[in-house]
Length: 266
Image (cartoon, rainbow, N blue to C red; front, side):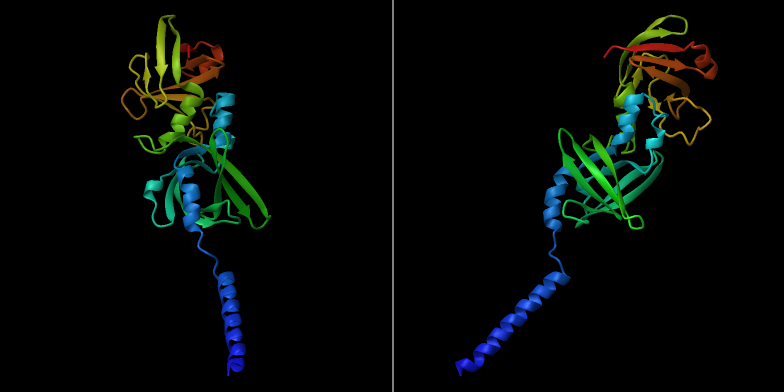
């Protein structure tokens, strides 16, 4: 009797083994828990497009860096707002258009990426953490990438969009200056990372214009003081090394007679 049952038992075991192999092929193991553990501690924060900020800092001119302000330029990944295996990510495109994308802890084309809408997100750790968004073009079979660096661990009090302002301020404007006004009177001026200014009479806040689609005719970098408030004032500016010059209009620029000449002290 035993000899009759052995083949049946072996057949059943082989069938189960083959069936389990088929199931594992058709339905891959859920890797979300592992990916959450891997990515979640890394991705928290406000992130800005790396090559854009690098160009702003090098040229000292958001206008000159405008060609690099395409696509996603700013995003907030708030892991406290995670829902299941997803995080809704508010973002800014082209330094102007608000939008959002869903970050999902599912593997992309390989196990080092997770899904970011139709694109994929990864990171690299060196001196500072860099996030990388990969976009695969099915038509050309080519992959483009953009890199992002962290501005802060959480959104500024005025909203995550201000993260770009902070990054630009830190790159070129923020600091303590001494100089003169148009009459030659000595002044001391301080610009803070978060857009506050002191030492310029009647002016308390500043904003570095970073979207030039709104004013393509200006042709100059601009500082907007008291934006949206009484006493708003717009100056064109030229930043050369540590010298910041503010001009009331194009005529002043042409004559090189600035309203304020400021030299950075630190």
